[in-house]
Length: 301
Picture 1 (cartoon, rainbow, N blue to C red):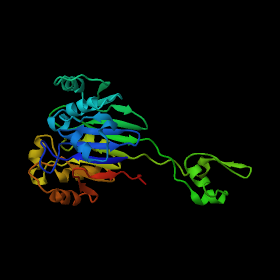
Picture 2 (cartoon, rainbow, N blue to C red; picture 1 turned 30 degrees about the vertical axis):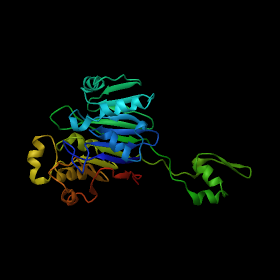
Picture 3 (cartoon, rainbow, N blue to C red; picture 1 turned 180 degrees about the vertical axis):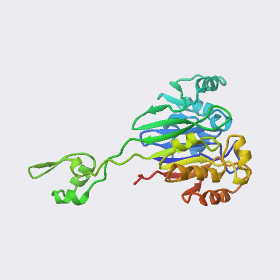
Picture 4 (cartoon, rainbow, N blue to C red; picture 1 turned 90 degrees about the vertical axis):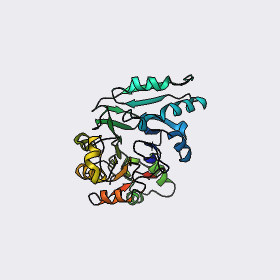
């Protein structure tokens, strides 16, 4: 479960930052959280193939969060895409994506399915779940929580040795294959600890401080929250449906999240260190994201 920040700009791209998009590698498939202008070019500079994108979760339909979608879809088609693409978004998603698919002279040659989600909706996917909550923004907007299912317990090497396991049989047990020790069969579950909680990442999209987003982020492994402005501009940011860096940190602290990344920085901030410092004064595990930064989510324990 690895994130790559493809774009960390707020409202419009800058020389330093592309528009909002995050690639989330679930190993079996690649997800996009938002798809702002320039997303496919950012993917080319990342470790990920844009052909692996299986699902796109759009928080809302302000241009800096979805205008990369038509280019991505057309490029997938030009590269002979056959696999389906699923797009998820708020209540107006079908109408908005239909407009995107009608742009220009282009024939869609692979299946695209649009799923309109309401706040509180949950989608069960291949080994993970995505839940949606209402974000506090002037247009229909969602925040998302991506959470994997319970993971296998840790391998107990000392116990395995006490049962006579030696050499390559360690790996076989770790991979889930029973092994023979003399006349006895040792099964993987005998040398595995209890199942471990799955990892989770919560993405706020654009939102003023929100109780719904706080609830969604409870005990999350990682919260990615917008921090459009420093706290001296919090009142103005809130009026437009955005948060300050300090407010993002306060929400992470109240939710009991394990880590926090700030993103969606206003173009007024060429450097993000002051925003990171502002957040860390409240929540010590806060970091400012930057374009093409990669982060692997560690196990909660």
